[in-house]
Image (cartoon, rainbow over all chains, first blue to last red; front, side, top):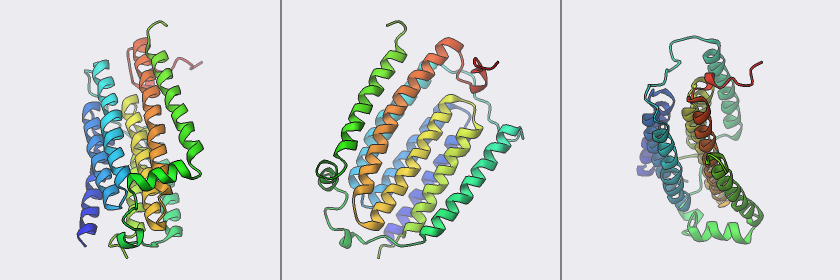
Length: 170
Length: 102
């Protein structure tokens, strides 16, 4: 019961922060809301037994990626507040919400097909579930070795691309 | 049986994903659009971890970590593009980026 209460608390916080990301006017405020959403998601991962993913979520997402975002926002020196499209019923906003509603219908359909199968308990999952050891074994001794190496190549390409794009003249 | 089922996890994941969709489709600031994309990626990660917990295999965790690596690469390149656009157009507003308009 305690776990369920924690799960629902952090879910509500994550969704609230997500709403703030989309609705706030100032990009810095949006970024801070996104960081809090990431922390809440990390807590949810820990509740679900994904300890390694929870740690990586904080390190990579809340740490590295969001620092990058904040640096860029501050670098660009955006003084004016961004206009928020709420309240105007321009075609773009209407179409956006209609697409989201359509997609929401699809998601509801898909989730109802999956149904509530329930999660396995911590005892069933075993003490090793979600630890660095088990995830590492799955990556390096299973079928995920090639995707893992491909991701390392992708990260190299990403870094080179970012430098090439960011330099004023090569 | 765990106190939380798979259903609530998928519902939270779906709500976060839809928030990201609304952000991408309605906001005009490139940075906020990027943040909404990150929100969508996180929603997918939550679904992966939830499904992983329902089957008992850690494959979903591996997928989540791969998605995070791709998100990091995407953020690096995307933000470099934003800086480049700002340097050329002095704006990160998507309505100002109409160079290809005939």
